[in-house]
Image (tube, rainbow, N blue to C red):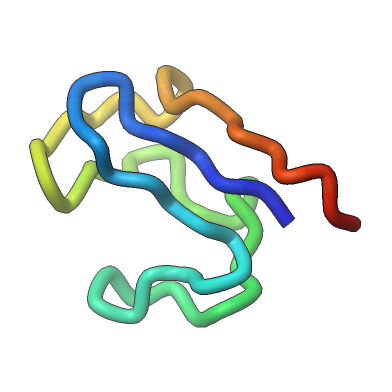
Length: 58
C-alpha cells in the first residue's frame, strides 16, 4: 500500500491506515478517495497534486 503527501503541508494519507476522521476505513485505496478530497490539515483541494510515496510493499 502507498502513502500520499500533501504538497503544502506534512499531511500524508496512508492507504493502510485510511483516515477514520475523514471517513476512510483502513485499507481504502487513494483511487477510492473522492476527487474533491480536501487536505484535513491545510485545506488544499487538489487531490491530483498529492505525491505518491510508495513504500514498495504489495
